[in-house]
Length: 530
Image 1: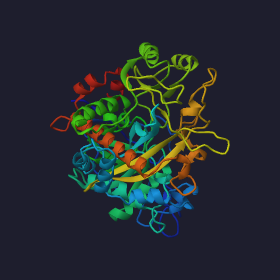
Image 2 (image 1 turned 90 degrees about the vertical axis):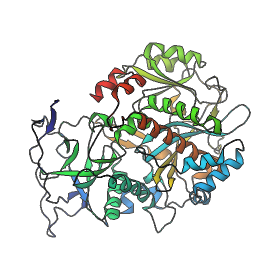
Image 3 (image 1 turned 180 degrees about the vertical axis):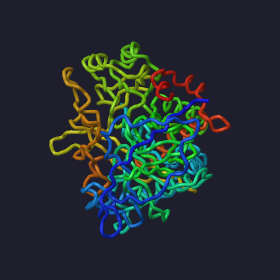
Image 4 (image 1 turned 90 degrees about the horizontal axis):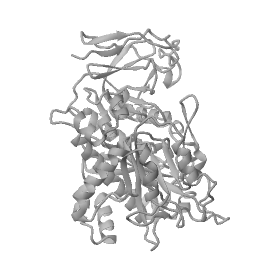
């Protein structure tokens, strides 16, 4: 039998007690005294901590009443008012969405779309898609999916639909979490929110989860590469460490771990997870498998005239073949590290210099995704499906048009999917009509707001955030039918990945490594899975 490692840690210094009996005045300083169940068994070895550089990575507990609007939204959002058109979209139910979509697309099977919007996914109940508003030489507008993410950001950027209910978006995701975490509970223990970035939203989820469950909820930092993490796994059950060094079993976890979660969270757990890691490997954090998932669902939906629309995509491309695929797309393409996120590991190639710069880089993985580039009318990829280019923003006072993408977050409920939040992100530089061969294209095309700092932490370039409020929304040049299209595309992409996740699990619930290796033959990734 394989011997697993269970880390056993020296107690961290406990915070000084406050007069009210808590261990500090703020939420982040409260450390209740619970006890871990019997842990190590004959199949586990004890490993001493290798470093204390992460000693401040501890686990806080939040309780009902801890949600404070100012802590869980950007300052701009606190004073923003939702645009009436966006509010009208959020008031639509799925039957109305299907009816409107079918009216505008008479070849679509409206009944099938209504059924799809009502699907309750098995493994992928919380997701967000990044979409582009594009057009072609005939002026035909549509939304296309760039990627779909498990455990996405978005709450902190969404103005409340009602001023009196600022936490409604958080509650929608927590509702999906409670449905998932309460189903077939395999262990006793507490609830937790575990995260590796975006503390603003992670703490919001923990506060709302505490209120909705009427329990104390652990909020736990869990970073890639942390030699002394406050999370450990014993017999496939999550345990978290409090400030005094005591470990606590976790029966249910809302996971906001986004960076290679498979290298520190097991694929099969007794702790219930939203989302389980299989959703990430099936496409939620794996662009290679997402491309396969979209292809499979599109084949299934072809008779119904529905599909996940994406730029032309080639996957499992080895580094040496990347230049040839770029050439086939007219010398312009997007190259992606399949397993990165937050805007990392994506390279836009619009000039030979862009490609040369990419080929000089050291790469941690063996396979890549090459995708058609959506640029301007004169310099986009030429693919089998024609040329797509950005619709872009409404021109500003200097007649400049910017690339924007749209993030649509959805969550599953007992009656199907529902939109939870929407925001947009603008590129740094305006979109050029004529491409300067010496200018890197990323500043015109890259929209992600996340910035990874030299110490591994994350910050956000919020100046390029475009809110769904009365001030910003009109810049986007989109209407309610575009929001409906974006929502439908998001739901279809989530269903595709959820179906792939189901395929990757054997009937007994074990992960099918042989099938995964066949579909995603990247030894570097397989090594991370162990």
